[in-house]
Length: 413
Image (cartoon, rainbow, N blue to C red; front, side, top):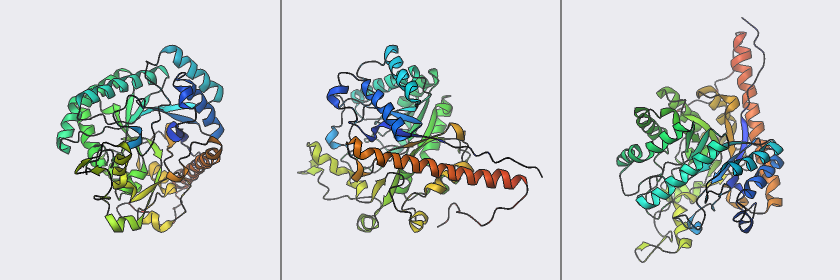
């Protein structure tokens, strides 16, 4: 027996800058692109965050998907219409130092396996600019999607990933970068009836993709940026998912987190099931996909009839919903991460991703107390989970004092 000191390790709490697309009005940031970053860095300090995940995106005038067809507006806080040069990096670094804010990752979320080769090339060129910006800013990771070629089967997409995406990972390796994939299945990204438009949506495909990466010696460059809201959408719970990764020997794959929840609408599930709305959505006209982007956004009813995104702390505490995987049990999420994943906890980022529809407002005065409260909630939840973990797994264990109770179990139905 020995006495182990109480020394909990806390994660870093940040926010994705897509939370407020118009923090800096477009007419201002289009002519002065780095002004948006400066103002977001100052805002992050005001909100009580440690870091920002810096959102990059093709400019609305350049993207293949019209903004009106997207569930979430375009957020190009990092404007890469022209290369991110050293003088731009120095300007951003000055703002970061002044406000004591870090950058966890550069985030560029797009379909990197788009079937149109010309469109795909534009996205790859943009991703390379995101890599360059991350390198100049001293950031070690870029976060995004893999996507899907909707004209191919899922198995064919694995081959497409190997042929097309692995070379990007090799470029990331040359720059010392990791690519972290958010696992959103992206139902509604197209007007088709495919539910899974991002092949890296679940542990089974993460492992398949990682094996491909290992064959090409870029396994260390492929990681997952886990978002529990997407697991809820697919009927998964965090603890069981983490347990599966550990059982399979892949609990090292998760390298960061989007802390965004999902609250399942039981009435919507009763009406449509977990496949979502399949008819009378309004995204097709006269037997073919509508050419009107305002109609195309209705494709997202595959998801939004079933559930609504949660900004952490905004959904009621609901123990039954947690057990039925209808909402995220944030405390157990943070506890399970420590118990089951191979994490460097003190250098792991919890990034608040704000997509709660009723609060998707572009009024800074109204949104500031909402985001401040959510960030505080995430920080305190993580601290409570860390304190329990350290007390039970370190302090009590060292003195051979048993822990009481059974706790939440994985794979329990």
